[in-house]
Length: 337
Image (cartoon, rainbow, N blue to C red):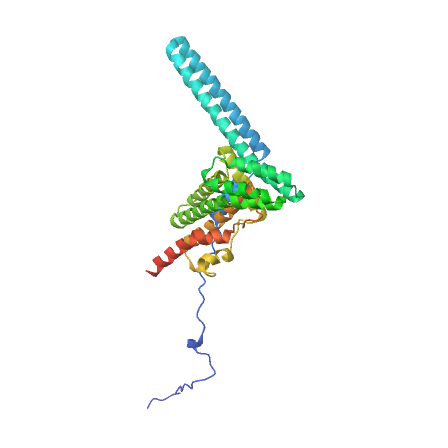
């Protein structure tokens, strides 16, 4: 027998057990996607240059134009002195180039005029509606009919408007009829452009891991979307007009704080608060697509010739669901496989 003290263990029922301990929480949590690409693109597009910046670029363009003009003049005159035939050929090319620049400038001015025409229609319609001016509303409807006279897709709406406009006895009814017959079909075409842009931005963000590539893709897709929405409503803005329109839309979104999104906006697509369960890139893609839908809704409101009255205002949540639900289902099926 062993000599010495003997240790006898007595099980204590009140002592805590290891099996009853709660699981250790996962301290590594993915940051919630916030759509950094779209937020940066919106800030870049909405940024207003300072006076010093405008002065700098204005002087730079003026100086570059003067230098190029003087160099072209010296080039042409020297060739006329050396070889008159070659010199006059260069002169003809210079003249064709200047003529092309003038045509481009005239097209830009015409594009700005078309956008101004839409703004004037919207302003006059709001004024006639506020004052219940039937004659003013009829003038607005006549201008609206003339605006879409050459559009084949508006023929049925114009015919329907001409048939029923005589029965309207107030400005609200007449403008509501014009909105339903002519502008309503254009709204659906504009919404399809918004859905396509949101889908494209979401896909590029989710699949392209390159730095700043998603920002460039988001900015390009939104510029194209705003330009096409303007074309749907008859704006057909040029480069300058489209950029001014984009700045107006983005500035409105930044000022109102609409360039932000949470789980509530993506709930129709995801079926609940599930952003934390998605991969980082795929979550960013969904958020950027949702923000693109918001930009599209703002562009529709800015480009529309009539403010929303009788028609249903497009909702970003619905457009996000229609544009991104297929992407989410595809991603989920891939994960299940």
